[in-house]
Length: 254
Length: 320
Image 1 (cartoon, rainbow over the protein chains, first blue to last red):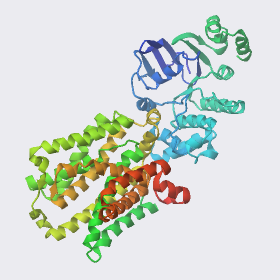
Image 2 (image 1 turned 45 degrees about the vertical axis):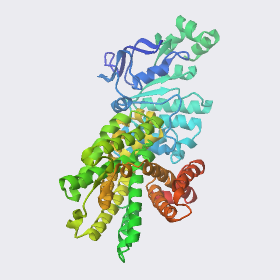
Image 3 (image 1 turned 90 degrees about the horizontal axis):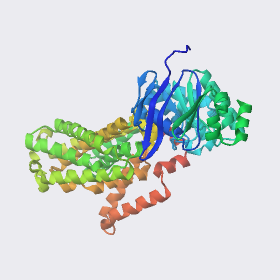
Image 4 (image 1 turned 90 degrees about the vertical axis):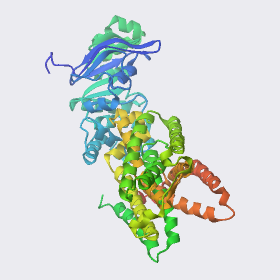
């Protein structure tokens, strides 16, 4: 990848208001192909809103969003999905009365490759395996544990064979062993050529996984850079981390 | 599909429906099965909306009634033969459903259900005031229209076989959609519409399409039914009761299943026939349907098929 290659995703002065609340304000950044970009910020900083803007749940009030050179601003989610952009949800959204495999088949069928049913089922089987749900593939999604449902979110998004994967707190609510496993899975996904944008509150995880980190506060970009740079950024420490002990901990891991 | 046992089960059902009354020329049984065909057709097509896409449609009767009106009117006022009249009814009503659908399918849940009731009322009011359709007194057609079939008795048999064919087509349609990519998308919409859209299911298009498809066969069966009666009037054609009954049937049989809905329709029709002819219950037919719905919703939310599937898990592989 050359330094001047076009970014996979470009946010150009994106803004979103909900009534009087400016949830995202004048936000610009790029995601390059093949990287893991971490998105951090305090609760209410606009991270999930940003995900919703990118995958078309609602359109931005200002600015444009480009995905592999195409202007996707204001496109509905199902069109954005076709371009090769998949996401997971912070609050899991399983298709409850369908099996794990059927959930993933939906992802594969209607994702980037728009596959026929039988081909989609094979892709879904692979995705189920990668996410570690192989033994539970015939279970109904509602019977899964919360960790299982998080994996299902990931498997379903993967089955779409996306170019860009948006991960919204896939590690939240998992125990340390599960976190460990999930981090391994995320690395393998990146190594298979998928670009990742992830929101995460688990600092150790995001600092060790991300190539670059963007920090949001009150809907604006506070800092951007390599994890080590961001963690020592005085404004970030002041506005976001606050606690000097946590800052020290981050430096230790970065 | 042809290799799956379920394909042949449907074929068997069609053959039994066609053969049973024909053996021994049993007209009484035929008339009972006519109603069973209507109920199975209406419920199976409603199931595409209700069971697959998860949208409660109180307006399924509009497809039936409008189909009836278009067909009877073409035969009566324009002397069209039956077959083109039926096709015109089917395509005309489907096209109308597509237009309605693009409008009201922006609504969800209760709001959609309410809008569909509005459509029933609106279309009924239109029919009552539309003079070419005879207003509130409706249209009578002369028995002379049965002549091309060789007389009224023969015509009734032809219509019966046509209704069995439409019922069979409804079952194959339900089955075909369920085992297709389109069906998978609809089921996803039924489970969680927002998640489905994010996974790439083109939700507005799929919903409008299924609404349109679910109008076609009920319209044709409506055409056959009212041609058979040689009479149509607004209060019969747009009777909200039949819409509600179709919903009860889907719930009773197990919404989203092909077998359950067909079985539910058949059982409901038999029960209704018994209640209507029994002197004790004749006036309580709808009360009993209501109680039935309550019991199903409270204790058997997945209906008859849910019960059968959980008792005999193997049936899940055979009965869709």
